[in-house]
Image 1 (cartoon, rainbow, N blue to C red):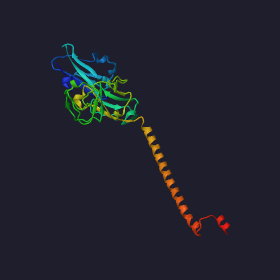
Image 2: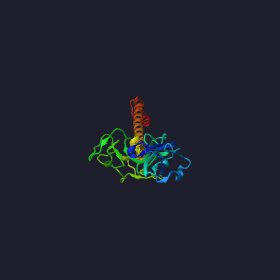
Image 3: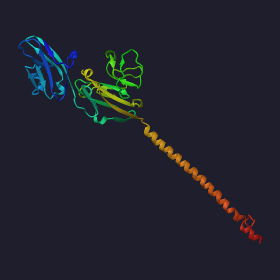
Image 4: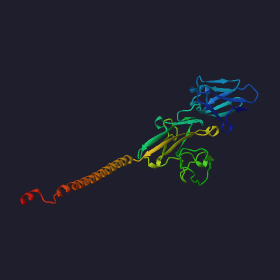
Amino acid sequence: VLLPNYDHVGTSLKIFDIAKSVTLGCNITQEGNFELSWAKDGKNVSEVESLKDRFKLLTAERKLIISRALETDAGQYTCSVPQLGVSKNFNVVGKHPVALVKSVTTANVVVKFESTEIGKTNIVEGERLTLHCIAFGTDPKISWIVGESARPGSILEHSESITLLGSVLYLIHGNLSNAPCLSYLPIVGNNTFNASTDHIVLEEDERGVENAKLIIDSITLNDYADYTCEARNNASDFTGKPAQVMITVRVRGKYAALYVFLGIIVEVVLLCAIILICEKRRNKTEIEESDTDQSPDQNKNGYHGNESELRQRK
């Protein structure tokens, strides 16, 4: 009886661009003068405060149009015909049509790091590392890949034994048993991470986005790597790749400065030693040359005694 204008029928999905208009349509195939009712999350759209002055109903065309769509406009919408007792649900999700700085917008979510975490970050061994991945979109789900930057195209069927291929990568999210395939290689040797570990902790941020923060309380030299934040939502599988943003974390040894200082001291000591040795050899050479220059004057009369002895003999 009802024919909704889904973007993906199997999931009752309707995708809209944030800041643009979204149109939900629900045709009635049965002849008759029936009234179509619209609700969001079980509440009539006319009673939803966030939609006030931003929606209109086209009765003849069986459409609900929301202008200047907001991220909060996502949710479950229902079109129903009370006289016939039938209804259809829309799973409405939003996406950002414009790119943000240092973000990827190929999916229905966009991600970026905080302004202090753009491109690369330097940290000293033993310090606390906190990476905050800010995701925009409807119900973003964040995962973290640690290692070299994620490389698309490495699709693997899930198996009980996954061997290491190419670069070492970590994936901390999801359940492999529920995923028929992976677009990126999420392994460390033969270990797969799907939650926080003793070393890496994932937390939700102030906006309630799960896994938005990656925290390492005491970073080690082994944590020197590329950290990729990947975000997706229910629409990502049908519209494109997940959104990704990568940052390089460079870890310096806590004794690195000391080693440099000691190296400078060693260089100075060696230089001083070389100078002293050279000076000692030069002085020795000058003394030998001085002795050689005095010998002819002393021996020109064939006498090696002193002048007083010569006077006494006379």
